[in-house]
Length: 342
Ligand code: PMT
Figure 1 (tube, rainbow, N blue to C red):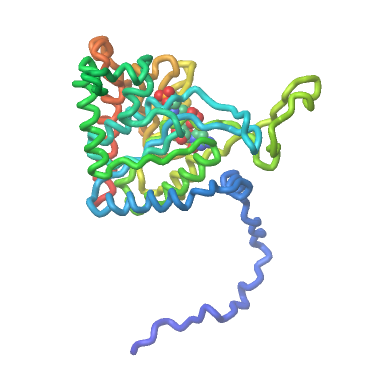
Figure 2 (cartoon, rainbow, N blue to C red; figure 1 turned 60 degrees about the vertical axis):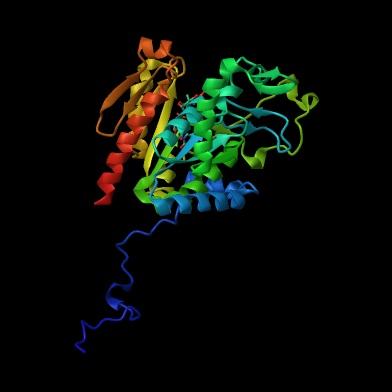
């Protein structure tokens, strides 16, 4: 056999063993995100959830179906370990639950990571109305039946719901606190890595920006009589921005869509663009609190901005903005898959 150039990695290289001109390598720094996971425990049920997600992803990977992770709803920030009080935000999960239905219609399998007791796909049509659920029923000949006024619409929703169940295309994963959200997002993303470009992340949840670290969290209910001057002063820390971890480490290869919520229109586009610069993902959907159910803006890394709005007729016909958002997102994702399959 012809021998290749002779070298042994185990041999010392005396000439370059000590080079004083090379500066010391600084000790590896922990990122804010790593520090967060070191300082906070995972939820006890995480392995169980990971098992369910693994099964779901394996099942759909086999058929080649694209899988989207939809995050939905607000996150809570507990102020006590035995939580009586917590900080919350406005999100009801309408965007996430509605979007999940349109993704299912578009042929996606959906992992729906949602705030527990916020809106769910399909049941949202009945859980978030001013009607009491009993209004949907009526008594005929001593038996409960669906009120005929609602039956035709309910049948349409029921068929879609059954279709999602029978095709095993919808997996509901709950969270409540921001800590549960972050750990679950990481676990699901790592499992979805095997889907590569066919994985889509649609991050509609309103994640708390501030939290109380567990090291400073009281074990029991805060007593009002113990507060100086009768005031409760809470000192919150910033939740690290995990989007970079998602893009770089947890879901490389996937397409990532984040949302940007503002209340001041004059800063919406610049905030969306700076999110793309900072996190290097593929799409930001900007929305304003006041108009979020009627219009959104798509912002891409090449600087393109595109407003998607319901027309007056659409709004009058109760059309949902997600019926316009999802086909657009799907188009971007299909292009992403094509770009990464060659
Ligand atoms: O539920 P609804 O009532 O229908 O309302 C829908 C909505 C307005 C909540 C939704 O459309 C929306 O805009 N969601 C994102 C709102 C938001 O809180 O954005 P943000 O600026 O905090 O975060 C921007 C992105 O960064 C998010 O997509 C999030 O995934 C990410 N992020 C946020 C915090 C954090 N610690 N790490 C993150 O990676």
